[in-house]
Image (cartoon, rainbow, N blue to C red):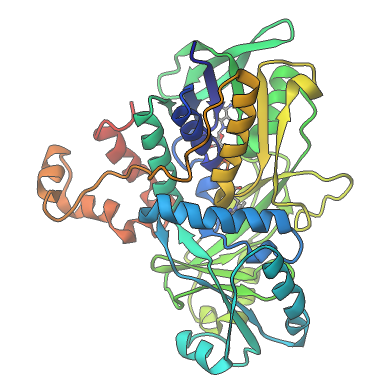
Length: 434
Ligand SMILES: Cc1cc2nc3c(=O)[nH]c(=O)nc-3n(C[C@H](O)[C@H](O)[C@H](O)COP(=O)(O)OP(=O)(O)OC[C@H]3O[C@@H](n4cnc5c(N)ncnc54)[C@H](O)[C@@H]3O)c2cc1C
């Protein structure tokens, strides 16, 4: 009999898990309380990491990043801009990290290319002309709206059910066994029950609180590390610009479509939905970013946003910059004597494929399904609208051609939150999600 699995959360993690399990033949339903990219996966920096950012201190996360960077670029090219990334040293202190950076990248199999000062300034004329060293790395830009939408569409074609705007409000429990979830449709207010053989808690920054409050499970210790990003609506570089130093605040500028996203900060919050952004962080980010690209100081920050990193807590250390970007699977039958539920916490959007494969292997072993993951080979589905069919498509959707092309064109991705509700309307009206 096919095993039934419920996945809680359709961020990058839950959506990739849904695709992975559905492609192995599981009967999967993913339940998401908001819309696509409503969680951290819509409030991030926009990088498909090469891993170089982590190579100095977090080799496993760096190795996973470079592995998934290659795979995701291959299976979902429609959501990637292959910008490349640069790591630049601007002073003597930055230069002191050179050998640590080179060794870390070597150990993590991340290809790096040292560039001469002359050639880097030719490629990036807005870069601070006092640059002292530069390396090219395979960082890329990823549009998470396209990425997650395509994961869910692919999973639907593999027979998964996708319930958006639907919240897991309670768990169905018999003794020590979780038998399913109670769900509430946040649009209609209607409640119902879903039974399953296994529930996968992939609710990101909500993961620990959800099962503590509803099931009394306390084994997941997380650091909720919020980060703010400041957006300038001009693009000044081809590459993603990284400062060559230990990961710290304000050391990345991402050219995201026509914008420059300067990030980020790191501060601990209690609740992923209730926290304030310190306005001083915005001017700090602009100042820090303009050390690499002085021109950023000449333009106003036209918008900012913040997301919450769902990090695994490591002992007493609550310095979220030092916390690992690796992920962990929690089998609550082993840790809490509660059967029928497992959780996955941590990781990055860039490593969501590996996370899904590992938890898929774990679930397969637990439930006697020996089918191997093929997600490194399955090309993700993205609906094609082109110049030939756009008129018909716009007519059939009752949308103006300009609006439709804005949604599907590259510039549509320039700010997630701006395009978000329009794009959701489009997907609903096309009947891609029920
Ligand atoms: C400032 C910042 C910058 C970052 N930059 C990058 C980057 O450049 N590259 C990169 O790879 N990673 C980056 N990350 C990390 C990355 O964004 C996250 O690791 C990733 O998006 C987490 O995905 P997720 O699916 O685990 O969580 P989420 O995307 O938050 O998904 C969890 C989902 O669960 C849903 N949910 C919660 N409770 C319930 C419930 N009761 N019922 C139903 N649904 C529920 C939520 O609505 C949410 O949509 C960044 C993170 C931050 C904060």
